Length: 341
Image (cartoon, rainbow, N blue to C red):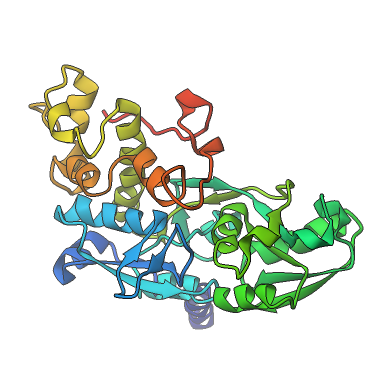
């Protein structure tokens, strides 16, 4: 019996759960230290990158700020932990970060074996390919024999192998751990092709020495549902992180923005009143362990989902990524939030 117990404990430690799982009171821990520790990318324009003064901005960064605003009413109460693809999961498993908001794909292995919880998909993406226009390649099916730059420790690396095998194509992987290393290798001509999530390709293309010399091929070879992840074992924290995303979607659905959120408190719509915490008997905030104006604080801090998207990666950004699948369900996309009631 003692051997069985020891084996179970060792197994839990190896899996990164149990001994390093979430405490049952992550919210209390966050409040006690006075900030949210957020795991982000080491630097991906539009999603998470620091400026010369060390100030972080981007689509994922705004999610970190939104969580802080929901808890503290102050979006500045965040500290950022830049992590590589390889470092991000140990950082979350060990408790080094409270939440991982780092363009991370939801997969069954990560949802089960690694001991994480995903729910909200804040960006529906898919893997693509970028090449130099001088190669005269119009399709990924013409890439047999190419040298392909890819980051290790990612679903990208696995999808790449599957795609070339399924299509009976040969390739030479040029693999690096850090994103900056992959970028530099491709820009220096060490590989013919760069593969990652298509959103990342739009971002990375702008950092190249001659962006106009490169093109993104039309094929999307995978489903990449991206979103924040937390450790298993704390349903309250899981709910808070998830419902911050749903609040951003619902706000856009209701037409609530940073500019009009105070005025919208006067709306006669009971759904809006409930959402903004002004309905007399609402308990939505307290049921989450937050104040009743948690959603108001989120929208004041970062805006609704559409504002976050447009500002960082959409029409109002250098990336100019179209909403596509990430449009609201009522506008041809699949972004959809459960009702607030």
